[in-house]
Length: 142
Image (cartoon, rainbow, N blue to C red; front, top):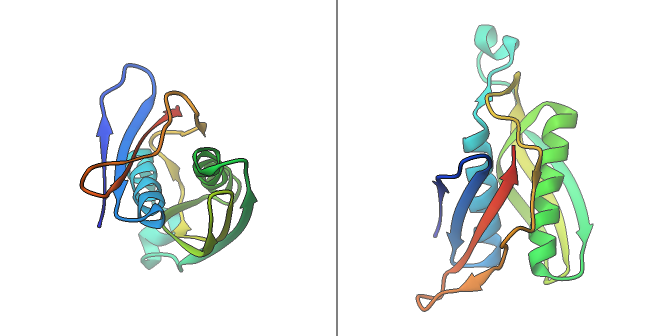
């Protein structure tokens, strides 16, 4: 089970997400981040239907899971801007406290209604609630 919600903030984008596993937590964050960004269709997709799905591979190493989470989100921000893609999901071939290998899954887009510049470490702490769900609140610079 995964879910996300956008929280009100005066200047930035804030997303609270939860998941039954760390993988589900990250999948909820990717879904929430790109839902909030408001991807716009490509000109081709308006005329010819949805563009083909893309997989954008990644391999990341970090000092701990909180930092790895931010690195994964920033990899998605960078890839989205570089390749003009929006990601709706993420597959992991491996995920540990300090490493992540996998692929971002999405489609080409014509742009975004909201430009996300970066995920931040501001007040970031991944926790596990009494119900066993992993939870985190992430602040994004927009």
